[in-house]
Image (cartoon, rainbow, N blue to C red; front, side, top):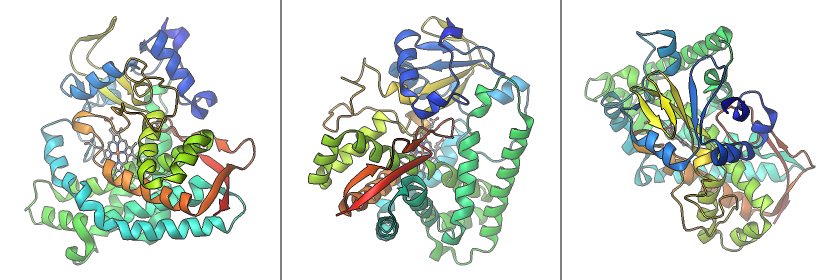
Length: 407
Ligand code: HEM
């Protein structure tokens, strides 16, 4: 049974182009799937209720125990972590930064984001065709995250390279049929570079008051006045850079894709962007979750459906599939901006739920407002206008070749 339903997010071009046909069939016919022949024992969950259960039970399904480390019997120092840890450590670190990302706290980023969106869309309109991902969505999201943290905008290219490299490797180890030490070494080198960058930035950052909340967090941590150490504070910055722009860039592109593929929704949003654009972004998050899945390590024997899970097993929670579960959503395969059921899991749930979701929505709202206001239409540039994703955890085209028709 497992072998028949097995699939490969790492190497299957069809999955990379559109994971949904594959995920939908698994959810309907084999909702709990033990993958065959992987280096580590991996079980995929596709139903909304199973995914939600895993996300809410952090004691049975740990983020802190990394499956690959448990399987290798690896223990000891693996650097400072912000997300790949469990409560109470996770709560201590998260509570030191999460308030800075609340809706009221991020509003002063608005003018900068508006300027960036205006500039990038203006430049895009000067060209006959563009790659929306490369030319607008990614530079916009990178600038947004740099500004949020008070990092130099001139370093945008460095952050973009980090994001590309991490996205291509994130979650890859779980799908391997044999270990790839070279890949591990590349990731380790990149993490050293990131740590080194933040450490040098903090050494030279000057007056924290001018640098905003992140600089202030680092300074108070250095002074021993924060509940976290300097290293942990810097790891917060690294986690935000690495988690916070490829996903936003993906959501911008996915929403444009959804509007192009659903002309009636496009017309409705263009006619009343203030009212309909937020609904379109919400529906895009449900319909095409940019971050398709998260993994956890089982800490004690537990059954899900007919599958018995053992400590050390990895469970993969497919947010992208849960968001199309027919037990929860009516006509789940329809992109419907008037949908009232909005319990989607694109930002996860439970203690690790995305702390950047308000910032992500603010950014995407601003970018799309500009794109829609400045264009009459956005049209595919040729039949091969979408290139498959190159990141195993991200559902978004690597390139989105479009023509912008100026308003
Ligand atoms: C559309 C954009 C985004 C999507 C779809 C998204 C999705 C997610 C999801 C699903 C998780 C939880 C993963 C899990 O439970 O396994 C997560 C965690 C996280 N996200 Fe986001 N994210 C987005 C944007 C952002 C932004 C803009 C930031 C920063 C400003 C951010 C920072 C983080 C951090 C730090 C975590 C780890 C939280 C923790 O473990 O406590 N994300 N994100």
